[in-house]
Structures are given as structure tokens and as C-alpha cells.
Length: 145
Image (tube, rainbow, N blue to C red; front, side, top):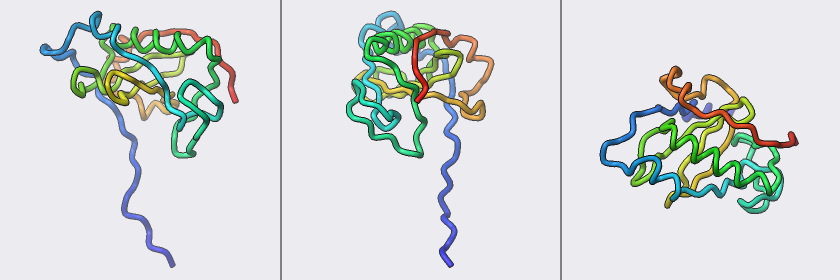
């Protein structure tokens, strides 16, 4: 009989934190961020590249190419609203925004570039929960696949 694995993947809840005193102002930072996305969350070709969906990743809805600038704008709104987590260098490592009434988390890939994905389970929402009131709410047309 096979051994039971010792490693268990847990829920990685983020923390919404105060904006650091030594960081650039949010209004200065938003112009420097980009959004490429991640093909690991896609089952369709996108600006992130050919689909490479992995079953252990959150599956993103299908956004048409013309909607991608609105995803970047949603990320920028989340940063401007200071709905962010710990900083990694000059940028927040995470940011949260409600897109189509679903909480989405953006994660810093590097150099100011982000990818994002839905957080469908409230147990995955960042803490403290009351700070999610700061997260912007946007509507972006999509298709479910």
C-alpha cells in the first residue's frame, strides 16, 4: 500500500496590509504596473500565451482580447484603493478586486507585471475580511468555458 503524502496543500490566505511608508504613492505606482496574465489559468489562447491550464490552478473565465485592457485597469484600481498585501520590492505582492462580483487576486510575477485569478471560495479571501470593502468592484464582459 502506498504511503500517505505528508505534504498537504493548504489554503494560502493573503493579508490586506497598510501601505508601507517607504513605498511610492499608489497614484505613482499604478502607471508602472502591467498585466500579462498566466496561461496556467487559461483554457484558451490569450495575451499570456497558449493555454496551459493545470487542474490545481483556478480556472479563469474567457475574456476577449479587447477586454484585457480593462483587466489592467481593474488591477490599477485595486492598487489605487490600497487593497494590497505585502510588498515585494517596489510593488505589492498581491492585490484584490471584485470582477463581476467574484473576488480576484492579482499576484506579482516580477518587475511590476501581474497575473490574476478568481478566489471562488470565501475561505481563500484575504484577512481581515472587513478590509475587502476597500476592493473596487468592476464589470468586465466574459464568457464561461
